Image (cartoon, rainbow, N blue to C red; front, side, top):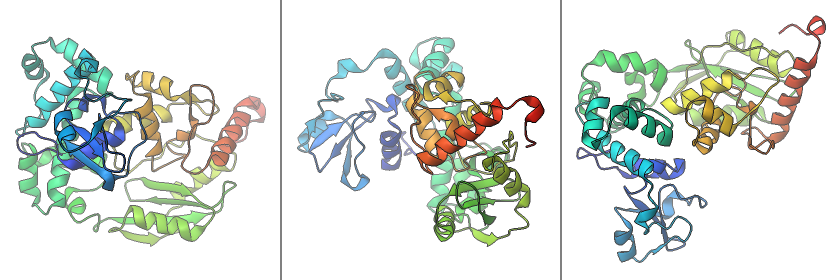
Length: 365
């Protein structure tokens, strides 16, 4: 989110630190009170706890507050800001300052005094998404922020830069995961049905709306699964519906039981434009195969965004349907998995065995 003059607020700054957004380099620094050090937003060091972080406009302000520069990211060394990142940073600042709607690529290029082709190509390479996708995400973020602060839908629409209500309602299902009115109420108008079933990987919860699957998780404790769902959707109406969820549960449970399928199920989830691109790429990986985070980054046209790909995998709320278990590290190791590496390894082994079977002996699924 940004203020009316295009300045980032602390929520946007903290998100940039968590995502290590390279394009935010130069727009602010953050200081860690427990260490007395200040860093760039994309510093590779371990992320601090939010309550220990202070934000500053630049390194000079941080130094005046008593912080010293990080020796890893050298936030006081302006020469280290490469031209591509500087272009993306300037483009983001221009987009963020526009409150009347996203600028055209031509207008953005004119502001940067570069060709539209060069701006599009460089921005997409650094950020992992196009300037338009970034602008749409920022505008949606402003809209959601205003709704959370209690603004009416009409006021939030126009304050965020939407020219009409039809545009945001077109995007609501895909990007909010609910209508604007429901989002403003914290999901209170949403009805999410769920069920918990036993699988070879342990108890599995599957939840969804009438539009599609919203949540899939594993745990050794059924009560913990239900508690996690309520924590994920604290204001929604949750109802256990073992029979009604069958259309979603049957194919997913069959998959983890050794009968893999492509799982072309509808989804009703919230995601950024970048996350959706990663999840779409994951769904395109054939059963029995894997891809490295770097390979997935290349697939979506963002070869330098391998770390961001891993982060998108970590925030996948519908595992199995979006098979993030098929994403591995470049050295062939499994990497991380929200539901434990033992489950990830078992899923991959099962899918490889399925693929290795002769067509005539292949099980239905």
